[in-house]
Image 1: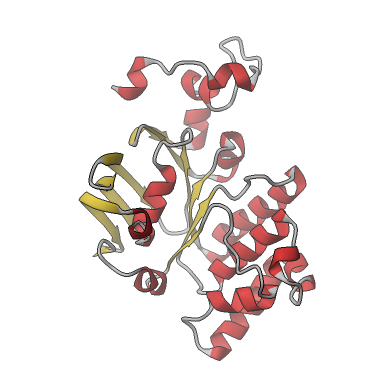
Image 2: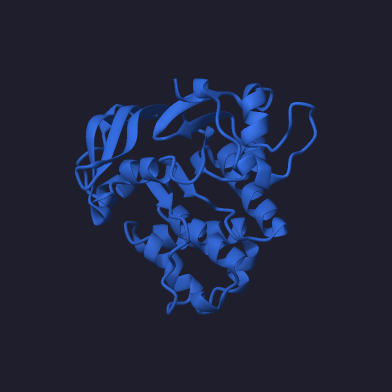
Length: 263
């Protein structure tokens, strides 16, 4: 389905944010990208979505294809029409509009009947969004806004849904509800998901494959059970010491990566 091959992305023709990164997402698969802040995860999603230009970003090498067709150089709306939709970090709703108006903006590429059907599907996935359909989006809680943001993306019936930090700043109960919905979408609707998430343990719990990115490069990949058994992943991303006890995250954050991670 989606194939990213040796992609290189720079900002302002100077700053290399992603270097020779490769990854793939198969149909109906949930794939997660793990890495520290600034590793290049969000930049990869923006490159796939065609929205690097507002930040003077450019893809200067490699290929990005969806079912064999290149996405590089295509306009963002064309990429959405091809079936690839991103939910950005921070949700970015139209706050003065109602929940339903926000959702209908996501269905702008569909016919009226198609958008109406998609709206009902979103309400089935997120019942609390239906309860708030007439509420001004800016008055919603963070968790409700995230549900609306995901629902808005689903209005175009995507084949590939990309989520950038969906759990950021949310309560654990809301996070569990959102991740359960994402997992059900993949299983029941055959929607592929590319997930960028700081909560490694949570991301690995629903993913079928994972990539770890450091300094713009993929340094490790594999199925979740393999990565969760890796000592480096346990220490740097899951917060466990070599003895198996959970470390204080402040200690983990300041711990230096071993050189072989960047070899």
